[in-house]
Amino acid sequence: MTTPRSVLAALLLPVLVVSALALATACRPPAAQPPSHLNPHADRSPAVSDLFDWNHHPKLVVRIDSFILPETARAEFTAAMHRNLAFIQTLEGFRGHRVFEKRAGDSAYNLVTLAAWESPEAVEQARKEVQAYYQRLGFDMPAALKRWGVQLVRADYGTPPELQ
Image (cartoon, rainbow, N blue to C red; front, top):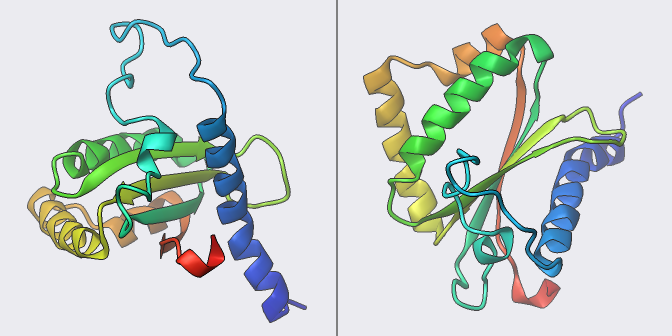
């Protein structure tokens, strides 16, 4: 039987894992990167520690999307994700994006994305612009996720000072 506590634990596990990864990445010295011509994603997003600079961006919002992504849908999903990222990078208030893939653990979620935004207002404006973008493309995200068999849990997070 599923209890409210087990549902909450299942939803929070990806967030905790990603938070730990982000903290570990932020605290580790930067690794040597291959030249940008060898790494097509080199200039796509700032370092994780730059994404989460709450000292300079106190209204920062992190959108965390947790996916259960079947391997059979990976190629189509990845193409759509990259297309979406190319668009949201152009939007006002976008700070950066990271994708995390599950390496181990009990979570059913095997892919988690983080998108950092300057403020709740930037997130709301981006939501509207992404909807309009999808309409122009004729892309129906809920229908695509259903067709691919992808499950999504989405939430926006901030950093309440009293919890820091």
